[in-house]
Image 1 (tube, rainbow, N blue to C red):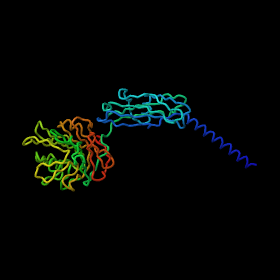
Image 2 (cartoon, helix red, strand yellow):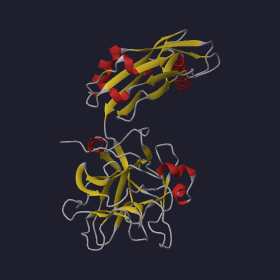
Image 3 (cartoon, rainbow, N blue to C red):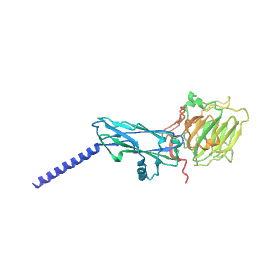
Image 4 (cartoon, rainbow, N blue to C red):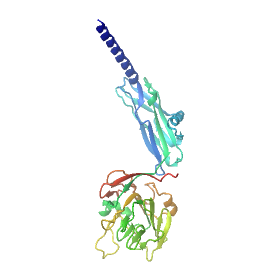
Length: 398
């Protein structure tokens, strides 16, 4: 008898627990909540002018009737964000965003809402020294409660590294360009350059005897490190028309240090200018008539040479001349950039910049393809899978 009472008591308790669980489930089922990321972070960069995010909400079981939702930007929640994350953020000013419709609906029989779109604009005008946050919350819902802990999405904007990943060639890899090698139409933007600027951001691991190639065309127009009679860390520009540009004092590079190289061909001034880290290191005047250059197809300087050669990054002539180091921000322009323009745009430029005809950021982070960010379609292909290295450039000043 006593055992039967115990079993009966256990059954009653189980029923009660089940009922309580059902009641809790019903309470949860009857609440709407955001299914979008609660916090979305954006890195402020001069080249990033706009962004778009979508917000959606949901319920756990199909709605019995249409549920209408209203969203709003809620400045009062900035303090909530700051208390949780010690961010010191300020409200994103209204002129930098638009809520494209603040209403959404979960249709009867559905569990997911329609989307609300948040468009961000003129982000390049925001200060990278400040953290901005925009809280967008579900302010109203018809016929249902809102789950308070999951009703708000925070959009956060702050300055950060402009470069987060680079390509390590390890003196065994290099980049070729099929459109250049095959003289495709897309490569024409890099041909017959009257004025020009070539740029590369590199970090060499080690300087050893022998040539290490930055980029260009062997025997025609090439940026490289060292050669016969040069120091292992001596930068040189080898051209058919201008001869060699180098200096045993000013053109020495430092191992394991990020170095920006810019070569400017200024037809009006009739000279080549070589910059290292924004500093003018050497100038050489043309000795005869100015010669335009073509990098978007195989070239040779002299008709008697046995073959034309294509443009590469990290390779020239034969194996063994690859760069033992990392690449980022390689560019070709059809304009002669000024010193100020070079200094102010080491780590990135707007891909739509006037005169930018090829732009390889080396920021893919995986695979063998290096994309041409100008949209001209001259993507590079590595000889083997690239070793991608996480970085934070420019480095923070301590």
